[in-house]
Image (cartoon, rainbow, N blue to C red; front, side):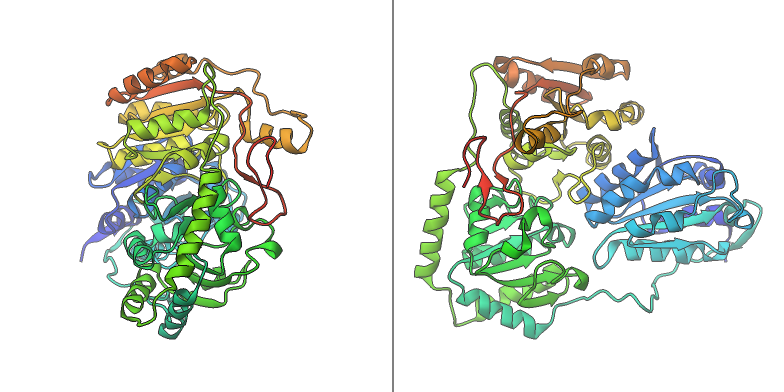
Length: 572
């Protein structure tokens, strides 16, 4: 039996777990662990410039690969700096393990230097947290952490590691567990057969059905099963912001995404439907609008791995708890075997109505001969990259434009902070994606407010040669805040204009990268082609877009799904 120190056991556990990258920042309470990292070469460490960025990098990695990300930080401020990133992952159910150094166990509760109760601080925004009580427990704790993070409804797990648990001169027998024993944690491995049969009967009898898919389809690796079922049924499908890419956007059955800034046809179809098959979504308020007015004529089938998500905000007529891939596979088999078939005339009439809605709006926007519209930038990027890029975003108008006008046909390509809405997410998330997909184009769509929240990571990009393309839709304001002020506060722009901005091109060059300004519409295509041709360079593209553009459609607050603004003057 091999004898290892606690620190060496921790790193060996990461190796045995198959961890490729650890994103982090060293400090006193974690130095034994960092020394153990130095003395091996299997697990690679990425040194960020701020701990929040480490978590977002791990998050981007997890969203793009489907595997848990890993973070390593020290105690006190190092640990607390991760909270925003942990909360971001928690809201979007992203698998992650955050390893936090802690003061020695003998000092806990003494207000020691850089001591913080990380278990208590993180508890509201983690799936679970664990504390190492003895060095011999480290392999089991790490095995449990990754198992909990990646199974069931995924999420972040924090592991608190007191410094004396990793002392170099104390050695113990090392054995990495092959199985995990957790008495109170048993995620479902299949759905209830009777409920699935009941749901399929309802689906086949529907006259105005719609399939509503969420991020759980992507997290559950069920895009293939969903696509097969949708095409077999011939029903319309929409998805949430987090579900973008779970079904090909270019397919004629796809209505675009739904909700606050969803398409007119998706929101109208949801409101007027008589049956909703919800797959891996949680009826978020940015989808439902006022829940008491939500889809009044629809019966609801809700599939989710997390029983707590079902009927939490909207009552389900047929709840199905189980992994979405397994449930969809069973549904597909029952649909194919059934002698009952959808009412062809009713479905044809339903599609006729949907096509009329689509023709009425179809994501139209006004163009200009001289001013660059943000929508045009996204459409151009989509065309120039053939819709194949990984696209990360920050939060705001640029995020909505990217989601609306970049057409994703594959899952795991749209990387954004949905539930928490975290500014500063885009650049480090793009770095996490680029690190593991070095040959793919990775675009970070951002705004001049968001990019400055983690702009120091341009230094990390230089150190590790991460040539992402930063597309800054610069309207010299906090665009979404300004839009709400325009619509709800009589254009009283309280603190939404950014009156002092850096020269972003010079700033990028100061970090050793390329910078480019696009302020003329005639130059847009030529310069974007030039940027995308620089495969080995990080390029910061500062694009001056229409300062007064709003994101539409936009749901009317506290209305139903069919209540929308379609432009600054057009409301339905």
